[in-house]
Amino acid sequence: MAPHRAPEPPAGAAAVTENRTGLGEFDRIARFFAPLAADPDAFGLTDDAALLRSSPGRELVVTVDAMVEGVHFLPDDPAELVARKLLRVNLSDLAAMAAAPVGYVLTTALPAQRDDVWLADFARGLALDQATYGIRLLGGDSVSTPGPITLTVTAFGEVEPGRAVRRNGARPDDLVWVTGTIGDGALGLLAATGRLVGATPPHREFLADRYRLPQPRSGLGPALAGLATAMLDISDGLVGDLGHIVETSRVAAEIDAAAIPLSAAATAALAIDPARLSLVLSGGDDYELLFTAPPHAAEDFRRLADRHKVPITPIGRIRAGRGVTVRDAEGVEIRLSRGGYRHF
Image (cartoon, rainbow, N blue to C red; front, side):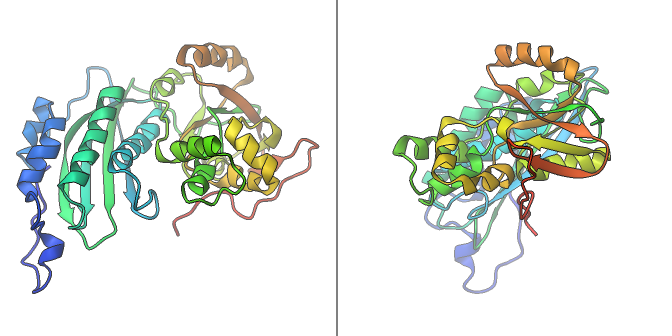
């Protein structure tokens, strides 16, 4: 994680490029990040690059995700939770290709006012989830910015050759499946920003936690290799992300809105305001797995759900054609103004 070397700053820019009140760049890396890079191939973060060796008979899977303050997390979110979400959204991408996590590189672009206390909390969050998910820091970069905070992780995983699950394998008559519960992330953003009107404090707390700390299905994802025909994780919204599968697979999908699994908190939120269903369908930030598979795989999924203690629910079917259709309990099509979140 060698530091970025910028040209000499213009007059008056020292507050942007130098941390005068705490540790300097090299000391920050040595104190907060080098302890996370115990792997010998990371060289203690003293070099500009690391070695990455795949296990014999395995293929590497690579993914990258960025998080920007005010877009992907709130400015007052605890640094520890920001770090854990950053790592987990990348772990979710690996799980969605049936890959087991191996290592990651990290880039931090931080304003000068984010002091060493913030960094210590951030590093503690990374350490917690490195231990939980068996992944290691390999290197990265550290730069300053006038703001907002911008964080990027590139994560590496391993999968048996030919066993990675892509988005393009869905076929007519496959069922559409999801893990966990849907809509908690988008409703959780409302809860975290005080906009989930009518919700009880326990429900607000549950949903806000789901927004701030997703649960990547790192154990279950690799177990779906050979069963799922297409898969991704729900980051931008159920309908929008299913749209990616049907587009690349050149098929259509039909979803039964009544079959979508909801948490007790999300069920209560919909009872207060049924219009929130559109947010459940298109809001994103769930980081659950969304995949297709033939109907005969249902028994396998029941066993996997029991083994990993993660619900796996069929919510629709793949058809010939194009696009995604959502129907209510009476079979009437639900029209949405958008399918999912888009940055541009």
